[in-house]
Image (cartoon, rainbow, N blue to C red; front, side, top):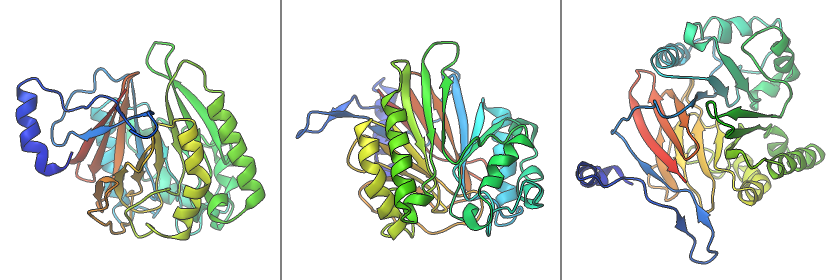
Length: 323
């Protein structure tokens, strides 16, 4: 829904007509897919969502370029809203990653920046292209130093329960750098692992979320760059094959919600510090903003609510995916 349609839909909401459309179908294939609607600025309670998390990326600049302001707002948001963990979508340390688990950047860009008590929760990071500038495996080893930093490998998976039920969300954390760097053997090995991981998802899995650094669609500066096209060529078929609900990424320094053709919704949360511009009017873009901030996701077994929040705490956009 475009913002110009908000007045009309607000009136419908007042009459008891919901904003969320039912499942729609591709006329050619008969397959169902998830649709979403822009709910901004209609804010609702998250009390019926048992799983909530923050997603932020492209942040590690020793507090500069609004990193400190975004971090402060993340802390305030998590203090005032339920939050189970934080996902970092890569480029954790500029300009060239960290050299070891004792690198001072751990303090300058992470420990001394995200200091709020509400952010002393589990963080689940992945590697970005800048993290490859020194020793990417130092970020894996740091998991044994920091209680909240949880990166067991360059790519890994995690199942999270939806409250006290047996329903779960499957998170697949991947390393897209080999895809963008034409590392054929490592790419083939990882794609086989992703395929197997998604294929073996149990019946209790209600949502599938894949987290990678490089987007496979974007309306930022890399809209036609080689790395975007490479990740799309390598990953898109796997996402579609396994009906992945969300692909969450960073790399472009903005906040975006994209719905290309197919099943999967793409969210980009790469505005943790420095910004890059976005293009408007691209047909598959539902929302784009070159604003500092982060994203916040709330899930139950039937709905995913996503918010884009700037570094002042303003909700720029809110949407809901519904079964």
